[in-house]
Length: 440
Image (tube, rainbow, N blue to C red; front, side):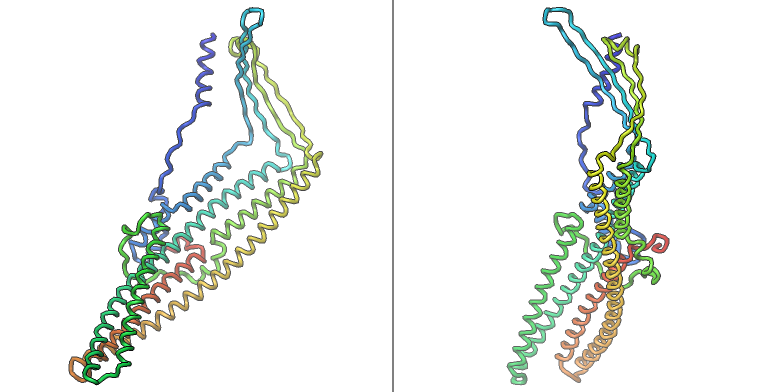
């Protein structure tokens, strides 16, 4: 019988004392968990979709918030009853050389508090609001990370395109300088005009160098968001989006209700309110149920013989410690009021952000329209200057000047395309994203 009892208890002891080795945390999440919303497909840029997918899977801060939200969600599965148990074995031998004695004891206890006043329920409600806030914080960071990745990607693409245009402008300035130097040698052009052309060429070289540095900085910033060690494997930037997805005008009114950061702030207010209510209920008497099942003798009375079962009802009177409970109640109230003020600040900041995003997007669209009109006129002027040069009506300089003017407007259009796409994404972020049914 002794071997039978040890065979039952020994596996339980081993299972309680052993632990699994820690598993390596994957660097990037699965692709299915990070697919971008359908709204992003409206930019018709597979490279952008790939970067958004990579950022959502590999961004460390997003992964940390995801793990924290999962931990708080698992807290909700904690049961209301609290079992405990123990096994005790002791061996004693008299000093006079008598026979050794071995005693064994098994004890199993269960405690449960009757929630007469709703105090326990308010605590569980606070935990639920905490898990909700953690989930919403993760969604808010995912939204802002996606917006920042898109903006950095377009900034990088715009700087890349501007650098190419700047190289063309340098070549045109070189041709213009040679033309002016020839005219100077023939005495047909003053020295100050040549110096002015050389200064313009130096400015063009300096601008190209500045664009190159800014392009590398933008690439490094994008690689940082993607948790990449180098920029060498970044996808080749494609043209900036000529067409962008639309945002319904009625979404502006619904934006505050859909923004995850505002919903997270509201969840934190609700959590602290639940904790404040729990603090107000803490002084009330508490009734708990407890049960105990145990056995103790030399061999547990042949495993289970002589088992002792005890049930009890306990009454606690926390109000006796009224001073400490009063201080805790006031602290909970102050925390709730402070979080309420933080919620109001978040709402006001969101309103300002939405208003600013709407104005920027309208201005960016208007600036792009004007730049397109000016670029169309510049291209016509360049065409006329080219025809005049080809027919001998005018010299080459007007044609070179027209090309330089057209390149300046093309550079401005690149910036306006970037500004329109970036302002739209900022508006998308300010509105809390687009619902799936409207985005599709």
